[in-house]
Length: 168
Length: 366
Image 1 (tube, rainbow over the protein chains, first blue to last red):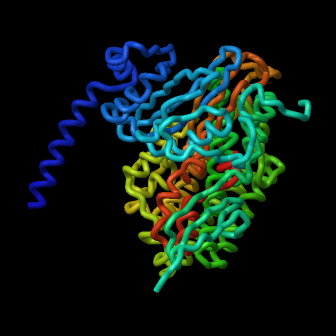
Image 2: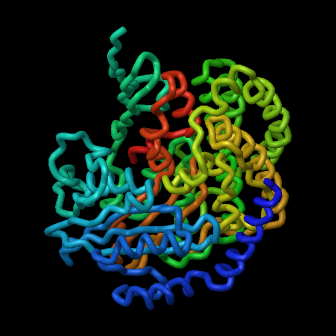
Image 3: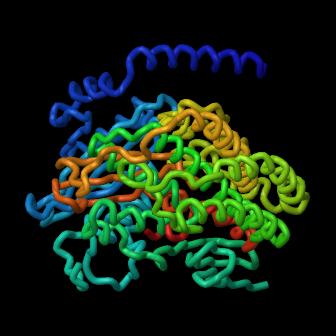
């Protein structure tokens, strides 16, 4: 009985491996994504720029269809001159070995973005850090509190217009 | 009988928290019902400070994040800036980086082993591991003047070449290491009490580990073979022959054991590098301008540090100071699952679980 089950799974994984191995490396994946999500832009380093509304759909697709199951880095950069924040995601695929970098733009005057915590649990503390230091609010996050600074802290220090004293 | 839940504060000043780390535990008797980890007591604003320092001046800050494996922190940062600038590092410098990086990984794992034995209760293990760590730190002091925060790597190479006779001393130490590792094996790893306190404690499945972005020994303890030195070899790691130890159950013992076995692999890599560097002569620093001004753009680079995947994201605006530096800190991210892992265990098990992650608070809080 158990032997039969082992055989069946081996066969199944063999087939799946063949399918994905022929299709996929990073340029191949990006081509397929551009078909499904025409609103994304890709630059020459293969970084994908995705608008905020399409973020959750695209991220779920990346995890489910392309096995990008490891959220390696989630951070954000402040560009006050262009009135925007750029939130940067870097995903690894443990099984296949490729990685992809994605960016999304958030309005600096109203910094709200969907949380990817429902997709990757590793986003929990990383989104809290971005909220704490830069002030971007992630909707759908289970516990969006400050993590590195104390709870009563006023302001978001990593923003470029946060005053610092000391004159260096 | 009516019972009541009790809130116990574990830390931030506590010898078993590996630094200033706090867990607020809600207890039902001795069993933890809810755990809220609180970090941030060592937050020094390194990412903000980096924005007002030149690229070379950021290197000492990177030392002070994971102060136990400072060479590897330096390595990640300089490799990222080199990627941004397109600088190629000379071969001798690459070999020097491998030797010092792996030696530092060995020192960090020695500390992790000794301190974990201390957490579980065995002081002897702690003192023995530090005996070897002293030898490594003496070597580093002879090389770059510092025992812990080296600031040894530079953008384009390393700052100093090996002094006379340094490689021979290192070679002697590496010859003696397998014997010492056997000693720790008998004393710590094979100890019945140690195994009873760490086996099956805080077990994590492979899917959970990947979902929560674990990396380094906590990920490899669940059986996932993901080591950046093999997956995406950076520097010249593809010239060396070494294995990646894996665990089975993803519990505290496996996390400790992966780290323990990695020590022998580091010794192997260093011995191979010492052999290979004898034929390589040349500069230890590439031709980089005195004032480092990378072109406008960004770069993200990950290396396998002693604690896990260490990543640096550097954005340049064309001036001599970075626009933004973000550090993907493995200790910080590995702790993300702590509040889910703790409920159901007793207080002593929480110490075992926290110790098995081998966190360094300088890195957690940045």
